[in-house]
Length: 441
Image (cartoon, rainbow, N blue to C red; front, side, top):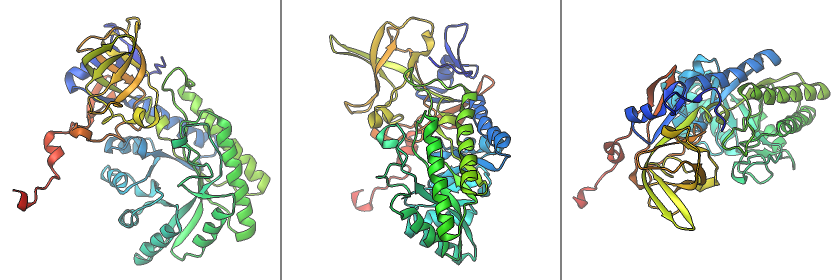
C-alpha cells in the first residue's frame, strides 16, 4: 500500500481519507463516490510552484492540467495556490472562466481546436494558445485580426523522446498526432510560418513526451533536444524562445509495481528539468526562457479514491471469483482502455488479512466491464465498501452515461469534512437534451 499522508486506517478499522471515515462518506453521499483530499492537492501544487520559485528565480508558472480532473472547485484551488491552468477544450475553458479563473494564466491546447473554441479563447483573453497545425495558425490569426489583437502563441514540437509508458499515452514518438517533429525540419517550418503572421506573437515552444513517466532522464533528454532545436532556429530564423513549456507526465503510484514517490520527491523531477534547461541554455548561449510545466495526474491522482458498494458475488470454481460493484466502466473506463492496474481494499474491513484474489466487475452490460481482474481482498460480503485507490485523475474526466448509468458525484474532504464539488446526476439530467420529433408522438 501507499497511504501517503491522506489515507489512514482509523480506530474502527475503517479506511479514512483526509480524516473522513469512508464508511461514513458512503452513508452520507451514497456510492459510487469520487472522493478527493484537498490537502494533498494543495501540497502537490505547492511543491511544483515553490521549486520554480526557489530554483529558477520564479521565472515560470505551474499550469494545472485540466484534463486530469476539471470542475470549478479545482480551478478555485489552483487560483488560491497561485498557479495557472492548461485547457484542451471549450468546455474546460468555460469551466475555468465560470470559476473566476484569470484568463491570462490559461494555456490552451488541442490538436484540432474547433473554430468556436478559438474564438471563445480570444474573447476570454487566454494568455497562450499552443499551435498544433498550420490551419490553426491561420484561424487564430484571423480571429485576432477581427479583434484588432495580437495573440501570444507557442508551437507544439515533437522532440522524438520515447518515454517508457503505455503506447496510448506516448505523445512525443515520431508517429504522433501531436506536434511538429524536430527531425526532418517540420518544426522549423511551422516556426517560420508563424513568424510571418501579423496578429500572432510567437513566444516559444511546447512539448509533452507522455504520461506516467518515472525516469527523470526522459525529461532531461526532452529539454536538451528542445533547446538544441531552439538554438538552431535562432541561427536560421533569428528567433529565440522567451517561453518553453515542457508539459507534464510525472508518474504516480497505482500499485506496488510502481515507484512510491514521496510528495517532496516530485521536487527532484522538476529540479532535474530545471538543471537541464540551465545547462543547455549556457551551452547554446540562450537567455533562460520562462519555464512552464503542466502537471495534472501527479496533482490529483493520489488525492482521489472511488468508493463502491458490493452488490453481488459470483464464483466460477477453478476459474474466477467476481465481486460486483455499483460502478464500472461508465465511471472508470481505464482498465478497459489501457488495462490500467489499481489497488483496492475493503474500506469497512481495512485491517483484515487478504485471503482471496478476485475481479471487480462493473454493472454495465459488457463482458469486459471490469475495474480490474487481479485484486487481493478479504472474503467480500454483500454491502461491503470497496475503495479503489489513486482514481483522482482521468476517472471522472473520462466518465460517461453508458447504459444510461449516472456519473457519480465527487466530494472534497477538508480537515475531515466532506462537501460536494460535483453534485449527483439525476435521471432527469439524462433525458434533459432528448427530443421526440412531433411525428413520433
